[in-house]
Length: 459
Image (tube, rainbow, N blue to C red; front, side, top):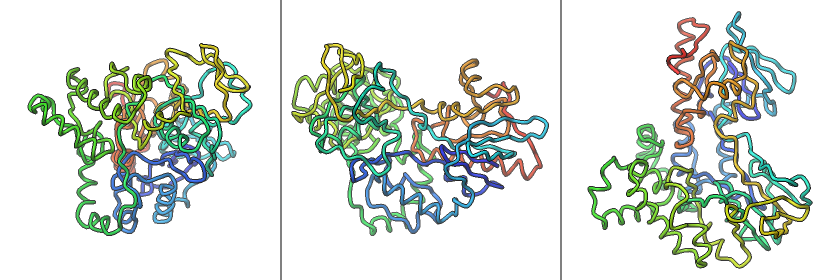
C-alpha cells in the first residue's frame, strides 16, 4: 500500500496504527521566534492514542509552530513512522492497471511502486494560489507566499511590509509584523470575522496530568459526537427564541470570553438558517471589535455595519491582537474593492488612485487551491485513463463518503473533498476517516478482495 503526503511518500505493507497520523499542518515562522500557531485547544489538537498523549505535555493552550514540530517528532519516534517514509520524494503521477488491480505510482526520484491500495494524505491546503497581478515578477524587494515561509523564519524588523490577503495566515502575519515593522500596508478584499483566541501560556503539567486521568478519554470520545469535532457544539435550532435578549447576550459573552472557535462552533445553529439570529451574532462580534479599534475609518473597513457575508459561512480565524494593530500610526489598510491593486512595480504596489505603496517586503497571504487542489495537482488516472482533476471539471465534484471516487478503485483519501475537512478539528477528521479506511482495508485483506470501487449511484 502507498500512502502519499505533500512532499513525502510512505510505503506501508499493511494497515497499521501508522496510518492514524494522517496529516500535519503546514505552518510558518516569523522573525527569529516562530509565532504561528494552531486554532484548536491543545487537548484536542493531538492524536487520541493513549501511548501518544500519556507522556506528552503541552506548554500553551494553542500550541505554536515549534511545539508542533516537536510533537510530530515525538509521534514519529513513538510509532517509528520514518522507517516507512521516503522523504523529499514527490509523486508526479499515478495510474490504475485494471489487469492487475494495482496502482502504478511514479515519483520525481525515478522510484516507481505498484501498490494494491493508494491513500492520499495530501492535506487540505498544499497547493498555493498566487495572485495574477501585472508586474509581480518585477518587484525588486523580497516576496514570500505564506505557504513557503522560510523555515528558519524571516526578520521583518524595521522594514516596509505589504500584505495581500487577510485570511488565516494573513491575520497571523499582520499581527506579528505589526510589532516590528517600520510600516505595514494591508491590502484587504474581505474583512476577516476573526474571534478572540484567548491563548494561555504556560499551561501547567499538573493540570494536564489531572486531565489525562479524568478528562482526556471523555474529550476524545466527545469530539467524535459533535458537528465540528470539538468538545463543544451548536445549540439546537429554535434555542435562540427560547432565550431572553439578556440571556442571549450573556451566552455570547461567555463564548467570547472562553475564546477559541466557541463563538463560531458553539453558538446557535440557527445562524445558518435564520437571518435574525445571524444578525444578532454578527452585531455582538462587531461590538467587541469596535471596542478595540479607535479610528472610525478603520472601524468601517474592519467591521462594517452591514457584513459582506453572513457570519460563519466564510472561514473564521483566531486572533490575539490583530485589531489593535490597525490603531498604529504606521499601519495602512487598503480596501481593494474601493481602491483595487493595478500592478506591482519594482518599488511596490500601485493602486487605482495612482499611489505606489513602496515596500521592502511583499507577503502573499493569498491562500490555496484548497481541498481538491492537493489531489488534482497529481496526475492520477483511473480506469478510464482520465486525470481526476479533469474528471471533476467535466462531471462536477463527486465522491463517495468524502473518501473515495468512482472509477478510481483502491484509492482513499482522508481530510479531502466532501469530508468534514474545512469545518472540523483536523485531528478529529483525520482519525475518524483514517479509522474507517483502516477498517475497510482490513476487511478487504481478510476476505481476499483485490479491488473496491464506489458505484456511480452511490456517488
